[in-house]
Length: 156
Image (cartoon, rainbow, N blue to C red):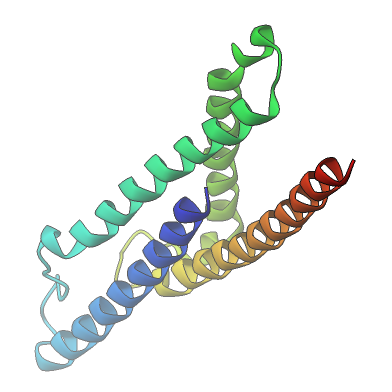
């Protein structure tokens, strides 16, 4: 799960950087030719690294969630609910992304050149970074508790 969160942070930062680059290019083109209706002609291939990172993030996050839930559930009947629980958590994530888009709707316009998607991606990158730090803190705390438990079992 940590790898998935790490790839999420990197993906959001890459999206932010690509959007900054696209905006600068668009501003330069519009200054050169003010009559140009579409100053941001970019190849779709510029988005390939973002989608690659997004796929890695989703794969690692799903695998991590499955591992986490499978390790925590001891009865076989409860393990049947691992997949639906993962789907529910991914659905909550999708729903929250819709809420974020609504919260920051002033940055998202009909025309991509009028939008401030760079700000939106930076907010997503910051939020992903906070989630990664929380996860790392929890994982470190959980590992320390497990080590203490193992040492206590060895001493008895």
